[in-house]
Length: 110
Image 1 (cartoon, one colour):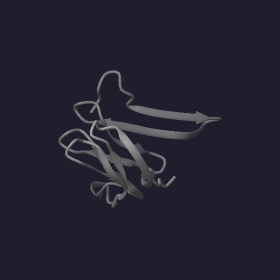
Image 2 (image 1 turned 90 degrees about the horizontal axis):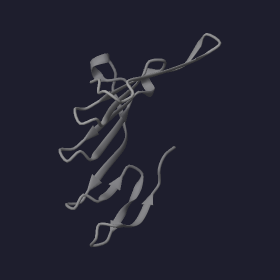
Image 3 (image 1 turned 90 degrees about the vertical axis):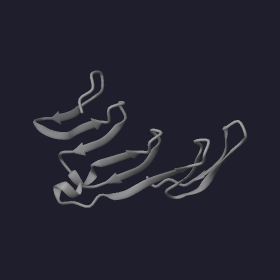
Image 4 (image 1 turned 180 degrees about the vertical axis):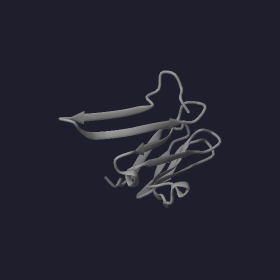
């Protein structure tokens, strides 16, 4: 979905060789939902949000509609107050009564 003011594509070339060729898609409220890597579709990212517009899942790979099976690389869980309580590769998060993050024991894969 093209939304005015949001980046829809990024292409970078040097000496006639395309180095980067990305396409971005957004949901109706402007949240990034996909980054299509045209040079390496297996590196494309697909992003999902819950009904409260919180990030819940990031998958990498080619979509089934295109013959692929994207793999979850990050997922997130929240408590009733909206505090993130867990994510892929983490030991958890703790918040106080004012919804301030107290601990982040996350271990991210990079």
